[in-house]
Image 1 (cartoon, one colour):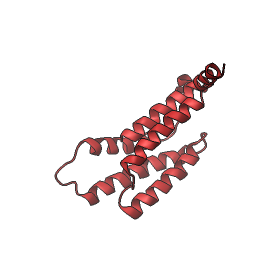
Image 2 (cartoon, one colour; image 1 turned 90 degrees about the vertical axis):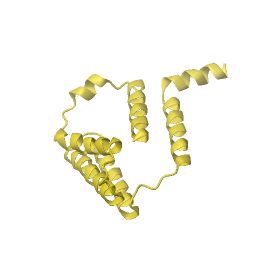
Image 3 (spheres, helix red, strand yellow; image 1 turned 30 degrees about the vertical axis):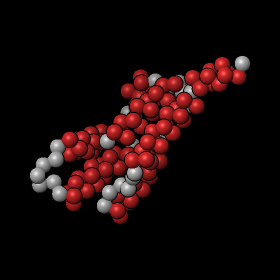
Image 4 (cartoon, helix red, strand yellow; image 1 turned 180 degrees about the vertical axis):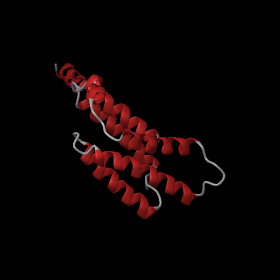
Amino acid sequence: MEIALLVAIVAVVVALLQGGSLERLAATKFRATPLLLFGLALQIVFGFWSPSWMTDAAGLTVLLVSNLFVLAWLIVNRTLPGLLIAAVGLLMNLAVITANGAMPVSADAVRVLAAGLALLAYKQTRWGELAADEASG
């Protein structure tokens, strides 16, 4: 869950630094938004609440079902830029999760990814250009 929040924050910062605007995002006409909200709500609720009946199999089922709701939302909105690619990526993640019973990831991989995303965001912005200009002369 933390990595998703980190990715979302980095994505917003990079988008804003690249000239995007929250107003344009707010004006975007998404369809079937309840699919997305329900899928995310399932993940959030069961991410913080672990009832006694929640076995590993039940947790996997909740994860898969919640992701299927998000996937359905992505497919419904596939004509918007980037959402078809996101749907394909989520489908590949679901295949891995289903095959392995979880998303295999190590703590080291998460640290490397976080550092890499921060560096990428830095390099792809005007801030990176300014720092490079100052360092060179």
